[in-house]
Image 1: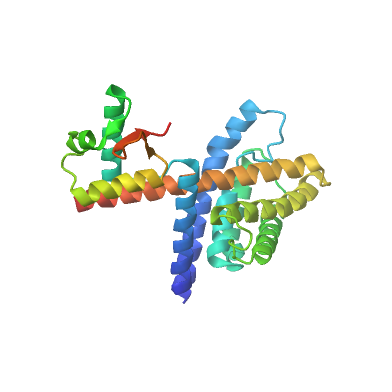
Image 2 (image 1 turned 90 degrees about the horizontal axis):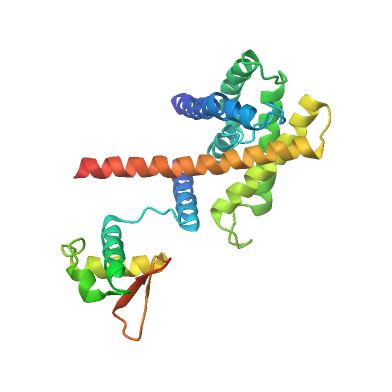
Length: 94
Length: 185
């Protein structure tokens, strides 16, 4: 049974790696909200300031720790990057 | 114990029947329409290969036994629909695939870090090696030779089928996750 469980776990890792490598990973709900907020702000301004992202209707109800975790996750996924001299600006990676 | 064996048999048979049904009902007619010069014995997107590799991974040599009845069922259906397949094709193909899979597993030994490859690369490599063995034996059965072109046809079809199987699994898992999150909400 343990062996079967280990194999299922390996298969899940395989699928996750494949998703990440092909860029079709299923990002979490909060990450999705923050990403959409950044995309929306970036369409008006060149980059998205963290203050604006926090206030954006899509991400305004996200708690502070979840918000920063989502930002980190999105950076690790290569979806967004910090830009400019100030650290509080983000842009979508095309 | 017996119950577990029956469950594995039913699960692999169900997966294989779905893969065969998609291949015979959709992929093969499309291939015949778009690429009429390619022999119908060679599927250029052969989904059952994905099921074979995953079954070998989960159940080892027993997968050969689990997959055999469904393979014979589809051999009959393929012959009925006018596609010529050798009567020994299912058994020879399964054994060749398993030998190829075993070889790849022995070489990599499950330790993908040693070769600095990702685990899904291992599945693709194992699938390709297994497909080369499969291609050589099936070419000998169907075309009485193992010309590079027919072996290549089998390898392309099998590896493409394996890749598509993985993508289908990704989306199946995603739908399950979505359904369970809706249930929770």
